Image (cartoon, rainbow, N blue to C red; front, top):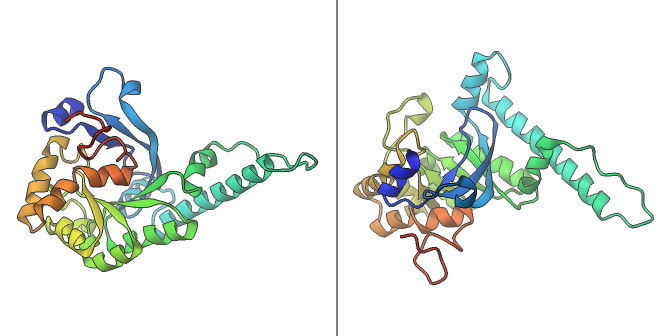
Length: 264
């Protein structure tokens, strides 16, 4: 049903992935919203790996009496997994590139590290769920440590640190904004956020975070961002070419150009 609602709103392509209950949630894909079989609708898979900081993993695991119950523990688990994947990747490459007279065995197969190889090699983007400014900085710190391609998801307090994000060259999927302040880390929730981040020089895309806010309200969110001060062409880019570029599919979608998909 969400696909038919997207089509009704003129949304022909979406990024789909896991939620933010776990520090490492899994892979994203980019898919068309029209089709009979999902295998034929996907235009990029996997497109990103989902990581989550802040209240969500902390709250979920506190309820289970398991780690991570703190922000520090969440960051620690993510760093541990990335470090393990980096060592796994390096050992794999060393074995693959060994000379014929060298006896270097490949590391024992590790499915979790295998999934993170494209991330630590910079071949696939890391998407960091982060609302608060300190969580956003934690995401950037991790990304810089492991030299990751990355995007910030939600970035609710981004407007408080816009110049820093611009200096880092960060990109962000901003939203959902058309919702209530359901947890303390959303206290700065505002439709001014997209406008101020854009003015600071941060590349942003708007998201409804469906099903938090139904996907068909994406154009409405863009118009409300304009009402809050965002340039209307910047708002249009935030639901067209910007998300396509951040997701790495702008060779096919995001703008009207010869050779691109014509599903307008």
